Image (cartoon, rainbow, N blue to C red):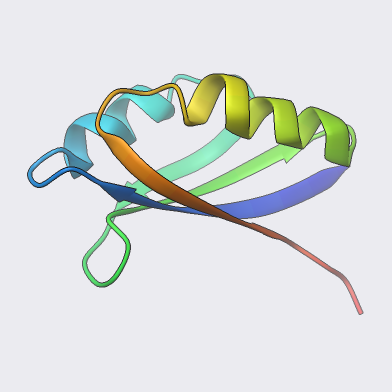
Length: 77
């Protein structure tokens, strides 16, 4: 299982709407609108890195109102 935090920047005033939409995406375990340089922080999981990439590109980045994403895979050292 691969887990990651996905940091999202949105259009002005769209953070709550984007977070609400992303909460319903399969593989997303948490989506919160926040303040700071990013507007939404998502925690997601997938079976492998390829599936995580598909989740981000095909489902999360497709949400209207998102301008940029940064995916941060979780590592266990």
